[in-house]
Length: 302
Image 1 (cartoon, rainbow, N blue to C red):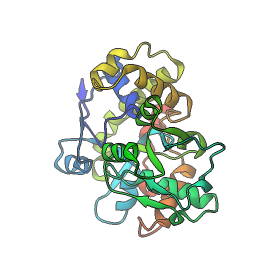
Image 2 (cartoon, rainbow, N blue to C red; image 1 turned 45 degrees about the vertical axis):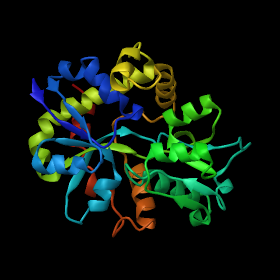
Image 3 (cartoon, rainbow, N blue to C red; image 1 turned 180 degrees about the vertical axis):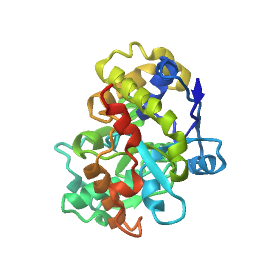
């Protein structure tokens, strides 16, 4: 049994395939022990990669993109989320909502774990021909703080994870009007990345790791993972398992866990959005931040 340590930028239901692979013995059947460490603040993953306490980081593709040619050299080896599993919540129902409702409104966009909620939403607005800064985006605060403030009356719209959105709906304090995964198209939201200098060393372990994640995704999409209540209670003991099961069902059905393969078009769509927003010094190409060798090995016929 070999070890491959993961340091993660968050601990959310959208990361469920990894937890299923661990809890259901998929990693061990592929000869791996995969300890994981959620980091708060999220940038601890970079320190873990630098000092060798982690082999792989799990987080946004925007990190390898922003650092491309700018010091640290990260390369993505697989994806965990093929779409952005968040939602726009409003205080009152908005029939026939489209993104052109947002200009002139105050939008709460949590940024504690990274810039994707605001930047991807603004990117979708630009793709729709809108001027995103005609809306007032409020940034940088945590999801929990924005949730409390939204319920108390701050903001017109709140970009949040599906679990928080579901809880707001159940409490009668919010209405889901837009789901990014369903309406926003493909976007490699969460990926596994490593230091490029270690890729050759890690590849023999990355192949069974990626194979395990792919298998866990298939289990979740097909429903063959079974009753996940014990896993929910273990990982998120303070959250109602029924809410988590509902969210997992949505994510399994909306394409977020479609597969581990990173494809050029959605990668460069996302890096183009980042570049337009001024978050990269040049347009970042697929081949400069993605190494497909583990993916190719997994898909190679035996």
